[in-house]
Length: 396
Image (tube, rainbow, N blue to C red; front, side, top):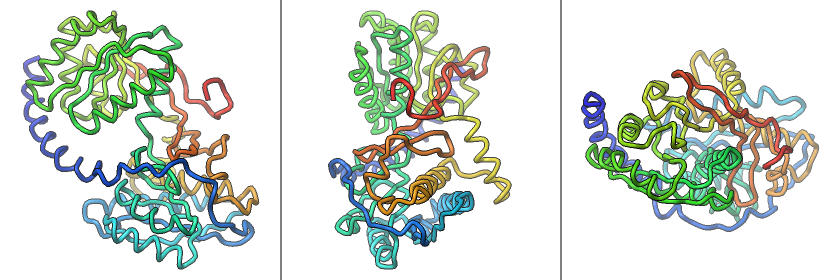
């Protein structure tokens, strides 16, 4: 345990500084807009002719240029898959700036774009969507922030709400009835807490207690040491952890909580983020038997393999969102619909097949993705409940 504490102390000090700087931009108050439910508007098209799609990415942003490149590559890979659909992809540089993105979005529409794919960041996407809203052009942003969604702005990124609901449905069906929520005292932690609370309410699960922890080794350790008593006294039968698997707090939590009364044999551990991205975590006692959700792995591997064959390297984790956007647009155009790019068409209940399996856009501008539920056994990931292949099954 002492080795874990020593390593975590250094990492947490760095992570706290980085997180503090980055979250101001990622979750700026200006992005917390409520544009209402997405309407059915959108431009008419001739599905038998070329359809112009604008891709807005931060090509000249030194911190995101490689992501911009991979997003464009993935979009072009998706276009190559389309049979009988002609997509004219026009790429515009946002430079990572809201003002630039707004100007480029207007330019794209003036030049014939019927729908916009991107921008990358939430606050930038808001500015781009505002300027084209009066022209009825929809924006499919790569953000995963549901608070910006609505009106003509949809988010393609996987959301905490979607993941929390999938895990809560599974948990409810497997005996969970009362949960403890453990979250960090920062914006991602608060968003995760809210998503879990919402999912619990929707699935008839009681929230027994909510425990935040400070962003310090001392704060994490103290909270982890007390969680056994807190969970037991509250009547919780499980603990939902919002912490990202790559965060330095995770090894501490998964080591210290079992050592201090939160026995995984007695309490179900559940992770809101993907723990398989950090398989080293599987060796910690708190990971044994824990649940987390993830996309269809065979489809993700297929996309990665095809991308690597085409471009000589693995794609950025976000690249698949551009592929998904083009796949959705192409599927609708192929149906021969003049209203293919309207909100009504984009939110069709059947959804679309993407790089991680089935997904669909919702009328509030957010999305739902079919996810698998996994656990850890003998330091290996095991799928407990596979990702659905369609939205026609129970629970959807």
